Length: 210
Image 1 (tube, rainbow, N blue to C red):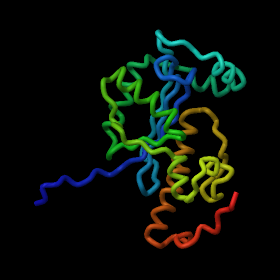
Image 2 (image 1 turned 90 degrees about the vertical axis):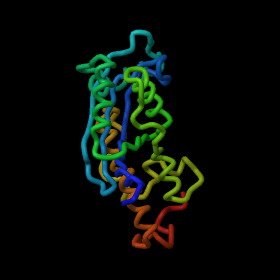
Image 3 (image 1 turned 180 degrees about the vertical axis):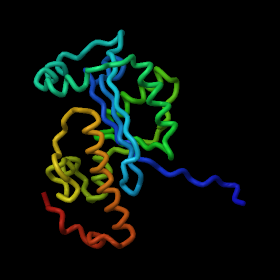
Image 4 (image 1 turned 60 degrees about the vertical axis):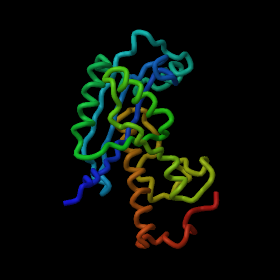
């Protein structure tokens, strides 16, 4: 019997947050949603909740002006808000109950992950993701073999990666699910290319020279 434990299945937890400012702690996370996908591309589970603003935080003026132009999304992000401590305890328990190792997906990870990590540590004392996080933009750069971040915006991605509406709704669960599906398509294409089964395995010629 091997003394090594088998590796847990990695689950991709595509996560989107809506906030009232850019800085975790100084500003509040208003809405949190995650959509979990397995490597086969199946949707495993979802989590979604709205949070009450932090009592010791303030709203950013520019962000609130941006929200004022999006009343439907603002309503979706602020309705039925719950105490942050309750939401984050529920979220941490949900993550621990997933049938595999949670890998955070962000689009971009530089914005969403700091808020989620800050709230998890502040209200539960730990972050079940640890340091396991993938930035979807960066992954796309690697798959497309481009050195430019500007080449991995949705309108410049391969059309078969983008199905349906590629515009963010700023409704957290909608965006988390859409972004997760985007990642799964590029992830599976990358696996096919590695195995030689992809039609793009030997050539990137189908991608435009933007």
